[in-house]
Amino acid sequence: MQDRWGIVANATFLPEKEEKKVLVNKTGIDDENAEKLVKLANHIRRKADGASATLSKAISTRQLLQAAEMINAFKALDKDIKAALDYTIVNHYSKDGGTDSEQSQVLMTIQGIFG
Image 1 (cartoon, one colour):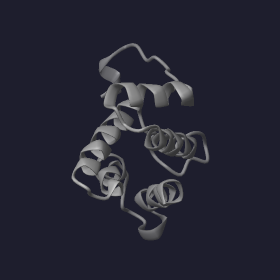
Image 2 (image 1 turned 30 degrees about the horizontal axis):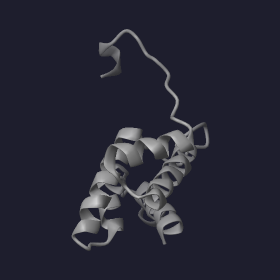
Image 3 (image 1 turned 120 degrees about the vertical axis):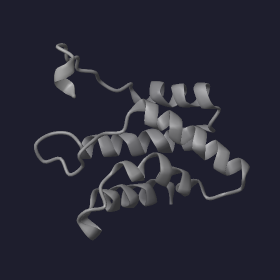
Image 4 (image 1 turned 90 degrees about the vertical axis):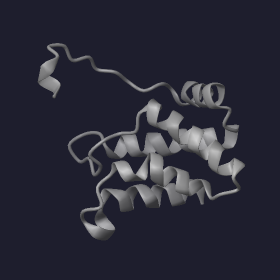
C-alpha cells in the first residue's frame, strides 16, 4: 500500500508533556492516566524501533486518544480500565509466540505501568 503514494514523510512523536496535554485537552482523561498512557506509548515505541526491535509497530497519538476515550467510558461504567487497553492497544499486536508474543510483551508493559 505504501507504493500508492510517491512521497514518504518521516514524523516524530510529540514530547511527553505535549502528548499528555493533547490527551487531557482532547478527551478529558485525568492527568495520572494520561501520563501512564504516554509512558506506555514511549516504552512500546522504543521496543518497536531499530534493528533489535521486538515489536512490529509503535503506538500512535491517535491510538492514545482512542485509549483515553475508552478509559473514560470504562471508568464511567466502573469497569477495569485495563480492558479498555485490550481493545485499543493490545489487540493491535500478534498473539503468535505464546509467552514471547508481541501481545505478551505489551501486556507485561501495561501491568508494569498501570499495576
